[in-house]
Picture 1 (cartoon, rainbow, N blue to C red):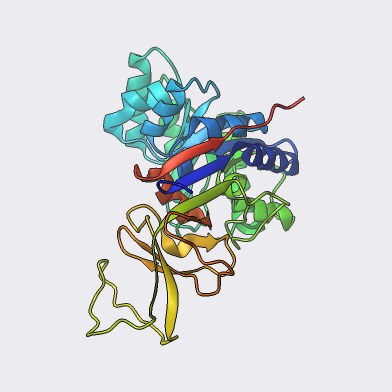
Picture 2 (cartoon, rainbow, N blue to C red; picture 1 turned 90 degrees about the vertical axis):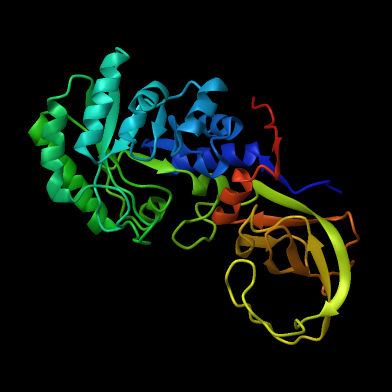
Length: 359
């Protein structure tokens, strides 16, 4: 039994997944991304123990959490800096992903005030239409960076799949490599090639990841063990690192069709129902304020997620061999969107299953 919705993180599974990803990438640098866990320091340490060379997150609050917890690996800010927050970016992040000249100038001024240098990966949009300058703007961006005293362009990167769903392949990643080579000729030095995120593992498996790509930013595949292209297990990774347990607060047999005139639900949707007769339902103490119910896969046989209000998860438990009682817990495996919401919610308890000591 659990008293409240609880997420358990198996740190051994995360470490094992990091080890497998690092090994599969054959010497390329892997930045372990913790943003889906809100910068959890234990998750970061498990990634580093598995061979990641740095930790990345998109929120300065999470980077500060990592710093305060004593995580000493290089930290990457995985979202372009807000110029007004440049001093904080320089204080917390060793590397940031940038695409605006105005932001470079703000970071340079902040780094000079702090008597330190700040590294930048220049982000280029290769079709996914999230962050990144268009390729034609890259030379002017790099030329502007050359005139700055305390900012160093250390690499060129791209983001794929997250917004537009564009799959990394030999064409777009090959274009990234071409841009890097052109920029290296311009600067007269070698640059890092940051070839995307977890979705680039599919390019690796397909044999389409260019050898010149020497850095990837991997989060979901390490934490959840799946491809972000197909959402199916990949590279033999473990998919059991994150488990959600939710207490049952009501069990009752109810009609499967609401009675009365149907309008919008609490979230502005007009629900649709099919008549399955009377069914046994369990109401659980979690809702859309805490989780994306569509992203929950039941681990208990015979459980079906029907939907959720802001505070209640509604499940069909008619097919369970032993029906749950009030106070029992139903278990689920959350997908990416569900995991993100669970770790963000202050109403969900987080428990870390400590890693076993390695010999």
